[in-house]
Length: 211
Image (cartoon, rainbow, N blue to C red):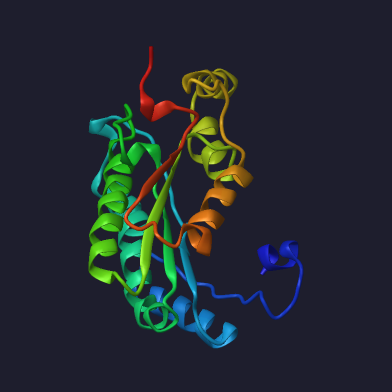
């Protein structure tokens, strides 16, 4: 509810709390949105977690937490929303990651989850066409609470880690959240009405390679 208050008020804002790692909650979240908004035109799957760790450090609980939130939650929110999106000829934008397109050391579980989101997007774009478009964005490092809490602040030297992140991509910075938001808005609007099955990198050139 605090997030709602920060966005303002009005009939276009509806609280739909739940845990996307649980199938029943995915259905409840979508149902609350449909009831509160009178239908559904766009679904953005943005819930996600990231944990770093070597192969030896990644246990079953970490795997389950990450895959259940990032991949399972995306799939079952889409399944719950499909009838409403088909009726409205709406669309879906999934939040993947550049880590779903390339590997990243000590992020193997996260890479697996986001790689799953990328290929899930492609598969469902085929299955749900022509009624529903399905795309995903693949951000690089972005200045979000999750990146700071789950990646930067978990390292022994957060300042050095942040500086390394900023120098990694060819454009030599990390993304602003609003830059990712604008890409999501583009894929969700009619300007992209002939685009489906796309995994759009927004990564400062990271997936292009490193010289």
